[in-house]
Amino acid sequence: MWSHCAKSILSPKTGLVLVDLQNDHASKLNSNTKSILFSNLNNLTDKQFDMFLFSMDWFPKTHVSFYENLQLNVGKMVQCSKDSLSDIEPGDVVTFKSEDDLETNLVIRCKQCVQNTHGAALVNHIRVPEGAYKVYKGTDDMNCSYSAFRDISKLKDTGLVKILSDNEITDVYVAGQISLVKNV
Image 1 (cartoon, rainbow, N blue to C red):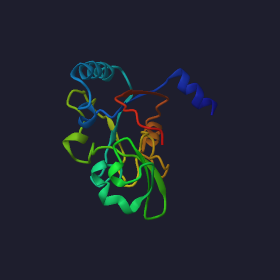
Image 2: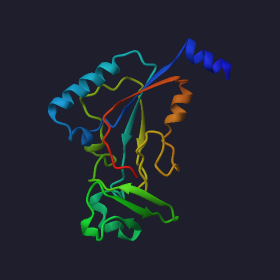
Image 3: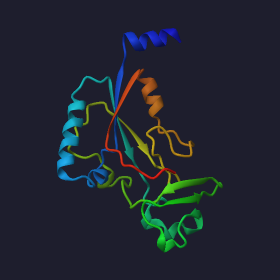
Image 4: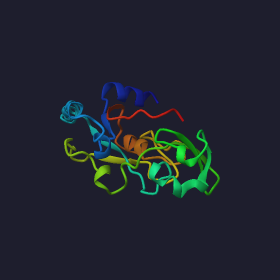
């Protein structure tokens, strides 16, 4: 343990985690904010980090939290603060139950960052350093990952910890575009 502590102090290895720099997220920003954000983030990618990693939302098109999929998932809903399905709006929290009886509270959102679409791709304004890693969040249609580490039910790991460990990263810096969501 002491050797690990000494190594992290005497010769740290740094990693930069860039969060949600995808077309669907960037489309919500005004052009001035977008310009400032991506200019600053590109300045960071020019810095001497030992590792770069992009954390990306990567939802299946059938994801239960998509507003557009509510009708398809009525049978999976177990609790909602609204009286009827037609009253549910993006931003509302709904509890869904999976086939294996796991209940998950999810924020309803408009369809975004669907796997293998232009909206889920990294914005072309950002430089992607050679050898950069990617981890994908929200890949299961019944769960979300508001964290770059794992889903909200703590069932599925994104692989971020293993990548950091395998690369012996001691210091992690995080930047990007993060949307605020209701507490669930």
